[in-house]
Amino acid sequence: MGSKADEAEHTTRLLDARIDGLEKQVAFLLRVNGLDLSHFRTVKDDALLQLYQDAVQLVAVVQKGLALEILDRWAEYFVQLSEYEFTRLQPIVSFDHTWEPFFLLCTKMMTQVRQDPKMPESARIQQLYALLDKGRKNLRDAAVIMCRKYPGTLTKRGMVMIKDNDILAGIS
Image 1: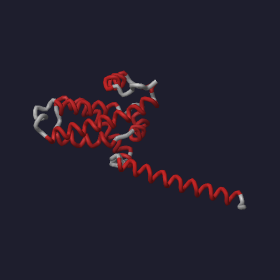
Image 2: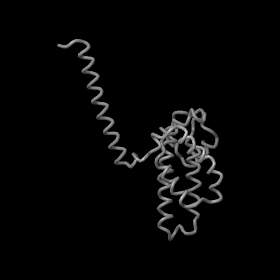
Image 3: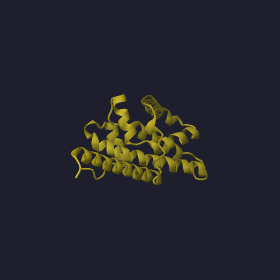
Image 4: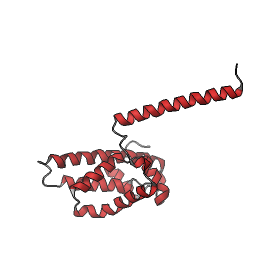
């Protein structure tokens, strides 16, 4: 029988092996589900803050209409963002529900695309709408997690957004 140091070393090795296995499984599941795309996971805080500020500013501009190229770029962003990035933003902007401007921007962009007169015959616009909808669902899923973690700081605007989209249905 080995010493306590040998047993501790063995336990550490077993835990390391288990962690490595879990990391590989998570990476596989993310890749299979198309969730490994996020380059935001590793960007610096100032780049993440700039994205947040851009989203806040675009919320006002989107009503005037944005170019499809801008909508395409943001649709990709919406698919990639997660509660991890939103949590990273919290101390930077001193706000718990950092998902709000992204969710609002996404829904406004969806409205713009849906109202485009070319929507019925343009495959590009239909695909853009589908990607925005996928992004909206992704943001909604992240918002649910954030709302569960920080229900006391949810803003009125956030409550309206989630009520309209019923993302807290079934949460007690």
